[in-house]
Image 1 (tube, rainbow, N blue to C red):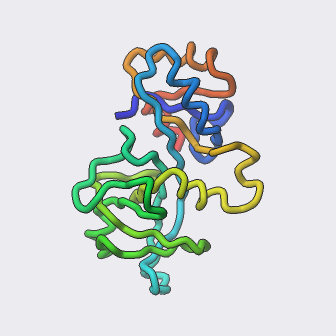
Image 2: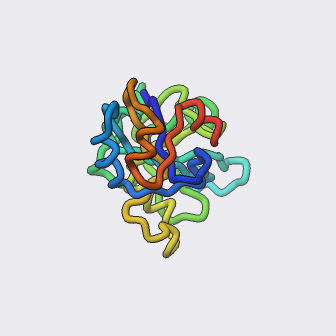
Length: 193
C-alpha cells in the first residue's frame, strides 16, 4: 500500500505534469522512514479489441506503468501477474471483462499507436482518473508515453511519480534532502489527478 507519492517539484501533485528520472529511487530509498519505493506512470488512452473499429467499441482507459512484482502491483484475481520477460502484456480491471467482454488472451489496439496489448490477467476495483485501469510494465509504458522524439525532455528512464511506503516518512525533510521533488500524501495525490 502506498503512503506517499513523489512528484516533480512544481507539478502540484499531478501525474500529468510530473516527469522524474526513475533513478531518483536510489536517493529516496536512502532517506529516513522510506521502507520501499516504486516507479509509476499514467497515460489516458483509447483501446479496442484487435480488428474492431466501431466508435461504440472504443474504450477509454488509464494505462498505468508499474514495476512487475512491486508493492503497487494489484493482486491478480484471474490469470497471471505481470512479468518483465514479456513485452506489452497487461493486467486489466475486471470491469473491462464485465462491461466490455474483454477476456484473457484478447489483444487490444491503442488508438494512435501501433503497439498491441495482450491481456494476461484481471484485477479488481482498479480505476485511475475515473477510468478502468490497465497495468503494464513500466518500460513498455515509457515506449507508449514517450514515443515522440524529445517527449521525454531528455530525462533518462522517465516516470510520473515514485510511490513510497513508510509510516515515519517526514515529507518536508524528504523534500529538503532530495533536489527537485515535492512529496504528497495519498489523499493529496488523488486530489491532484
